[in-house]
Image 1 (cartoon, rainbow, N blue to C red):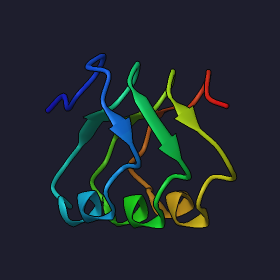
Image 2 (image 1 turned 90 degrees about the vertical axis):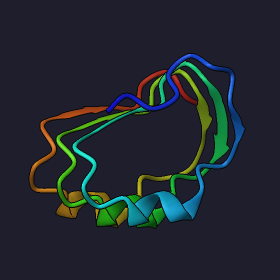
Image 3 (image 1 turned 180 degrees about the vertical axis):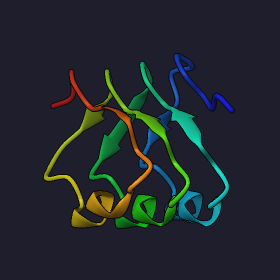
Image 4 (image 1 turned 30 degrees about the vertical axis):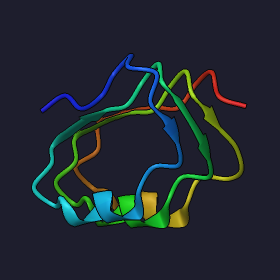
Length: 80
């Protein structure tokens, strides 16, 4: 499932996104998301690909992302 790549979406990533635990692929690249990444992303235990590049995220990565054991493709380059 490809969600919202290159659509100029803005604001923060909703914490409720962490409730979609069956997601295996999430692409939010090339938007205008900002703020910090929500720790709730760590609940996406089936996630294999997480692409967050080319946004305006700031701050540290949440420790909870370290628990995503199936994650093989993680991209966060080109953020503030």
